[in-house]
Structures are given as structure tokens and as C-alpha cells.
Image 1: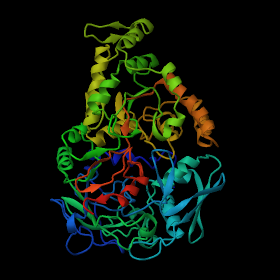
Image 2: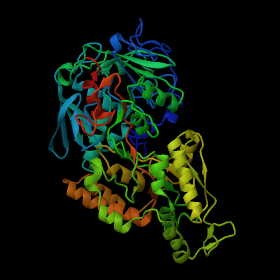
Image 3: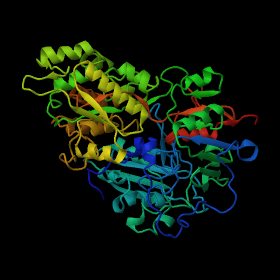
Image 4: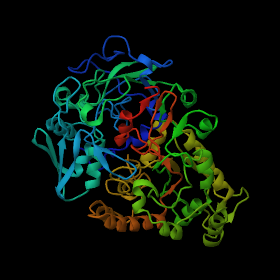
Length: 597
């Protein structure tokens, strides 16, 4: 079992969505293990692929082409690996592996998956009945014993969902079709447990029980036995191709997918994917495509969830994380001046291509599922917005700072408000542009910030160890445990080591004595009103201290489509499924229609 300082189970939610991280490479393929197939093999099964990355492949165009998840040659299809390849990662479409329930970001509802639903007969008990007839792709039964085994790996192997055991006492199978979770009384956090129920891919005990604990995450699993509607067909450095599992247990529950194959071409750049989406060679995409509305203005049958700004539903809140141990930055009034200095409308329009509204002074996303916890009046009264004159007023009249010959303010004690570097990973172009806007805005107000874009491993290590001045990075996006988990990530010092050691949240080591009890109150709240009361206080403490500054609202995932070959994608006007790939987003896969069918 891992400790409270282990990485949160959803740490890969944003990592998996960033193409730069995916190119870092997966785990090395090692040896042959029973049930997994040969290492280094380029096909999951012998025989000709039923799809391809060039043109419209498959019988009568029965292939759905997708993009935006895979940016390098596949190395592992093990859903328990640190960075699995598409489509087996924790926060990707449940095409091969499935979860018990599926989260809908629009309203926070939990849709059926392998389980029919969740019952909570008492505060400490969660019961889930499996769907009738659940089976693995090899024809064997998928039972509650597989679920118990999967979650049990969190006690013995270095899997991403190990942290769930800080909140549960047991996972048991009262009968072959029922799974029961017993929650701890202290800490009590049913939302966080639901987060794991929705995010943990269930694996077959018959296959993974043959692996030693130290091999559970490193086995490449090149012939995956899953429970989902598709099978791995072929993969190489140019594509990953899936073929429909016509014996899928869920055909009678969810319907039969209309496409015979799903193909993910592996592009070298976003631009390649943009061109293919515009031409109709890609049907649906999850990559950042700037000014996508220009495609439909040019007559292309391209669409997004919304036809007007911000085009996508917000689900993430990238932040300016401030090192509270750096001289000058440890002054809350300096942080407040920076908050007023940042040109948020420019970030929304330029860096985010109008896919974001200007960010507000709250750790709660003001629309969608989290909106019920958002206090717009308090944000307006206590928060900030872009106001360069206000930033200068704080510097000159409240801090009594004087501007030096270089245009940068200096505090009365001689502390120069500059020389600070703002870091974020290289190649994350929308974030790189955002950082340049932050630096320019700060300079215009007399605060000296420069940008530096290291490779991801270098940048992330500096962030985790507290070896930075300012950084742009994500905490957790919308999910069953939000906004609790975002407040935890940004403000909870429990389980966070001192600077110089690796932290998995609260990278700037913020501390406030009121935060832990308020987080516990929010986690254990019996009603939304009780939870909101705790979140109101947490958000007020946040605005009083400003340890981080929201910079934009980013989609949880980008959801873009071209209807040249497939139609009936969900939109705000046709909202039968959420604009997601993960979780409940898989529902649209069963409902889109082939043109001419």
C-alpha cells in the first residue's frame, strides 16, 4: 500500500492529454508472460489489418478515424502501466478495458459501465451490481472477483489507483455479481472513492495474477484481454488499429458500435492532424486545433459541442503556481499585484483561441458540474481581474515600492520584484503562449518575469521539488471528486514533504491551519449545501492568500468532429451524450451514424 504522499490517481488526466508527455516513451518491453503474447510484436493477432491510416479504409468506409491521443510508436497496452498507449490509458475511451461506472462532466452523474449503478445503504458502504453477462474478450466470465483483484493490486503493486486504500478498508465480493466497498470513517471521502470507481480499468485476474508484483506495471500486454467493444488488431509506428468485438457482452445493453474498425493514425505534429480533420480523413479529434470555427465558416462539415465561444465545455483550470518560499513572492501583496497585472482576456483569445472565458479568482470552475459550488458574488467582491492600474497602485501605494532604472519595482527593504523565471514544458504551445502573455503583462506593471520552457521531465522535477520561481501547471480537472480534489491539490499540506523532496500536490507548499478541517468537512458533507459552505470558506482563504492564480479554463478534453463520413455526433443542440472521450463519452460511439447508411 502506498502512502498519502503518493501521486493522486488522476495525475495522468492532464498528462495523457498533452502530446509532449506521450512522446517521452512508455515502459520497455520485457520478456514473454503467459496470457500477454510476445514482446516486440507489431500485431495483436496475425492476419491482415482491417483498417489503415491512409484514406478511407475498411469495408465501405466502416472505419472511424480518430486523432489526438497517440504521438509516438506504441510500447505498452497495459492499463496498469505508468503511461499506457491508446486506448488503454486510464482517462481515455473505454474501448478495450472498462470501468465500473462512467462520469458525465456536464452534471456529475455516474452512468452504468461494467456495473449497473451504485447503491449506498449506509455512509460506509457502496454496493455495485455487475451488468448481466459481463465477459472478457477471450469468452471467460468477468465477475466480481476480477474487480476485487484489480483494486487489490493497489496494495501490492505501484499502480496509479493505490491511493484509494487511504479511503477504504476493503473491497469484497458478497456474491459473483456484486462488489462492495467499505469506506473508512477517518478520513471519510465518498467522492474520492467514486473517482476511483469511475477511473479504474478492471483487468482479468486470470491474466494479471500470473505476474509478479514488480511486473504488473512493466508487462507490455501486447495481446490485451479486455472487456470492451473493441479488440487490438494492429499497431506500428504509423497507427493503432482496433477491430470491433462482435461478441461484446454489452451489445444488448449499449448497442453494437456501427463501425467495424477504429484507426488512430500517429501524426508528427498537431498541424498534420488539423489538416486531416479539415479534409475529412479524420472523423473525430482530441487535439488542440486553433480557430476551428474557420473550418465550418469555409463550408467544412466540422463541429464542436458549442457553435459559439468557448466552443468546448471547460473542465480544467491551468494555474500560475507561485513559489511561496521565494523572497518577494512570499509577500501576498506582491502576489495580488501579479494577479491584477495578468491580461486574462488576451490569454483566452490568443493562447486559447477563444476556447476559454477570462479566468476568475476561484479554484472552482464556474460552469458545468462545479457551478453549484461557485459563488459569483464572492468572486466579484473579493477577487481580481485584469487591471494594470490596480496592480501599480498596490505596488506603489500599499507596498511603497519604487521603480528602478530598469523599470522593475523594488520594495523598501531592497527586494527587487523581478529576476523570476516562469516555467512550463516546451512544446505545450498554448501554455507557452500563455506564459509569454503573463511575462509581458507583469513587465508592463513593473514586475520582472521571464519565461523558460524545459523538457517535461526537467520542468516537472523542479516543480515537484519546489525548485522554481513560478510555474504554469494543472491540478486536477472536473471529476467525481471535484472541486474537493483541486482544493486539496492547491492548499492541503498534509502528506506534502519539505522543499527538496518530491511532492505530488501542493507544489509550492502552501499551509493554512483552517484548510484541513474544511477539506474534511467538504469531503464528508451529506448535502451539496453543506459542501458549498465549506468550499465558500476554502475559496475565501484561497483569495486571501493567492498561492496560485487561475490562467484559463481548458476543456477536460477537446471534442471535435468532421461529419463527411459519420454523423450524429453529440452537441449542445443534440445532447444525448457528453462531449467526452473518457467516461460517459463512450456513449456517442454507439450512436453516430455512417453517412449513407
